[in-house]
Length: 247
Image 1 (cartoon, one colour):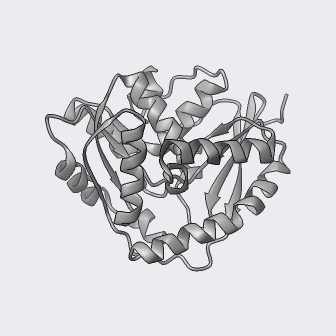
Image 2 (tube, rainbow, N blue to C red):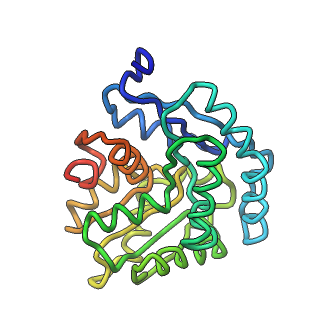
């Protein structure tokens, strides 16, 4: 037994200090016997209003990730999950692979990232042509598009909400998210993919799948699904999209 509330596994979850959504989404899924220990990356300046600001935000993440990992490791987790996504897409497929290897070397643990989780999810769902949206600035959307293209997907559309600060990501209302999905959706897109872990999209994505008749992947659902399946757990969860319900 790992511990009383996580008798099956404890997942270390690395999140920016501005993120209020990831842990909520994971606990809301209520996977029996899985516990989470967050390590927080300190973001003293959360402004991300243009490309330069966004690069500055990534610099803060890179400067504080080792401390966040250190803190999460004190709970003796069984796996490390990246509860932030932009950095995991940066540099395309090779950049993601290098990022994951650095975390494995640092922790000695299996690692789950948003980029790899989305790729695995799309393959499990049999989707190749995708439309993608984010809360990011154009510089980050280009990196996300690069990753998916290098991973073998056709990106039919990609755009971002251009949130001015990291906290504003969690303040985007459902009606704006619906508008964004409508803007990027098309008959050519076999799936909608949302990245940016501080966007509250899991419940809405589940509803949109029924309305649109196609997969709608919320990145927090994808990372939880991938962490569970890679760890050997086959729990099926309702209310968080067909990925966790059926695959």
